[in-house]
Image 1 (cartoon, rainbow over the protein chains, first blue to last red):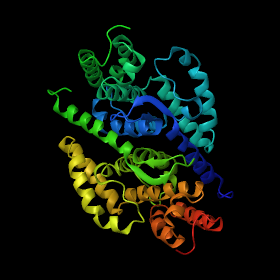
Image 2: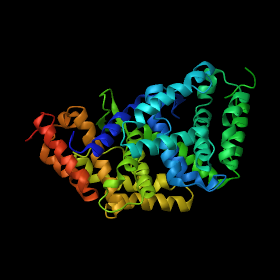
Image 3: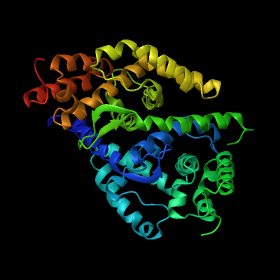
Image 4: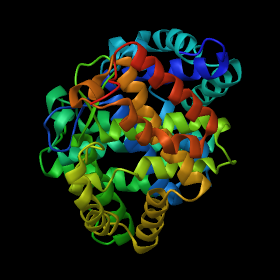
Length: 200
Length: 200
């Protein structure tokens, strides 16, 4: 585009490259059940949740850092693909595939931004900081909302039990006790309504 | 969901409602030309641009405010639909349709958040503040990138001339002189390559 302006050129090449996130499909259905959700839409939805629900974070969070984390958290899936959280085989190779993807994708940016995004992504993955714990809580809560509002969605398709979902949503309470309580109430209601199985 | 917790209930109802933004199609094609882009993906893409390009803002911006603006700027289109920027008839009714949509959609939230989102959206629409001018620059730049990388995309389909595009991208330079220069260079190159017509 503009070979003489390397920095802006690299940034714009990255911005064009990440258009591919709109093609990475998740298991989750949209709430009207018309199709599967993609990673770009999902990331937008998490950013909206961060903006509206930060008052429930367990420890006060830095909103701009949480927003950045949820916006970038799935970029590695452009290369590594979406790994279904209940697919135990795929999960074994997930970390290596995602690290290679992070090297390539974040590496398209100027060095300072490569390192900023890489370290935010690693912080998100590690789930230790208050910001990462809250971002993870949102990432676990959003598909629960979708599965509930699609009368079981992915849970039914994959024959997932309440015990498995409970394991999956455990991090919600670590980032936000209030949202953790809500998620537990929601899956209990899903069980009562037959959206979710008690045993496999 | 939890009738005894009105505030969280309202917030979650809103979060479920805005899933509909994933169904609002824009005129813009994805860069691989496989389909049209939707508003949720577009909003995510603008947020990524805000995060990476804020160094080019004409005046220093408040990143978290810019992020919020771009994340919410198209929510009114859930009710009002996407208005094609080169459709002069639709543009005449756009403001009224979008105001009614803002009343309903932002009104789903608790009062403090209704007023926060409403005022951010109005600020974005007014294009006066530095944050709004920069958010607008990104909103005008992103489709230009898509049209360029799809060898003319929407421009060709609608028979748009360089004069019309130049009018459409004028706000880019107001939010970011550097990105304004880049956009002008890009459309001149698009003209040379035949992606864009000189006259209608």
